[in-house]
Image: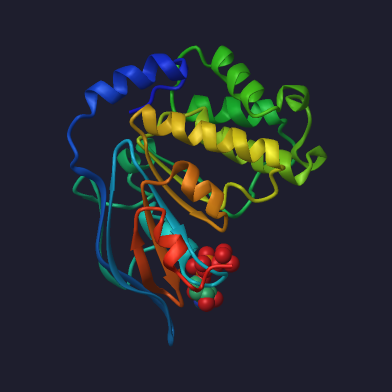
Length: 248
Ligand SMILES: Nc1ncnc2c1ncn2[C@@H]1O[C@H](COP(=O)(O)OP(=O)(O)OP(=O)(O)O)[C@@H](O)[C@H]1O
């Protein structure tokens, strides 16, 4: 697991060495999700391994967020199984919650806690030792230091997105699930995002992300799943995006 509070290079070397094995951390087998008459996601298989990034790519409504919610245990499949190291993925399972960090598509912050207080709360909940310095580092990396004492309502949309990501980074994690992390970020922040995600991979973290941005896929992903109307239309290395004629 990535310990909050270590430098990227330091923990990356250790984790990279420790994670030689390629057993999938997350295994989705025949997983599908129906909402009433609507088959939001047709059954599919997907493995996500430590130190790798899998990207879900597709138009609005193609099923990306549905799949992410199944992968982090926020929703249950109507068919198939979702396992995290052999355990059913369930966000009510403390062991799963302790190891799976999510930066989702919904923003939910306490209106009366500052940016810094949100991060402090998360480090307390996850028992992070010596959290102060680590919070300072994450705030600086996400360009939020100057906003540490502001309330969420005072943040721009890009800063709110940065806070969502910061909330996932101040806590330990083995699997990082991100829903369109590039949204609302300016070009420079997108470059920093790609650097950050490559660092997470080097650190041994498994990444599963949904994105609309082909550049992010090419910069970070090892494996891409292209979804269309809840079905897998293409799958493979990032170059499959060039072959997919449904792309923009
Ligand atoms: N709770 C729900 N109840 C009913 N239908 C749902 C529910 N959640 C998702 N859907 C439907 O499932 C389909 C896939 O939605 P999903 O949010 O997974 O798409 P997406 O690829 O993440 O889209 P976007 O890029 O717009 O975020 C859509 O048709 C959506 O309306």
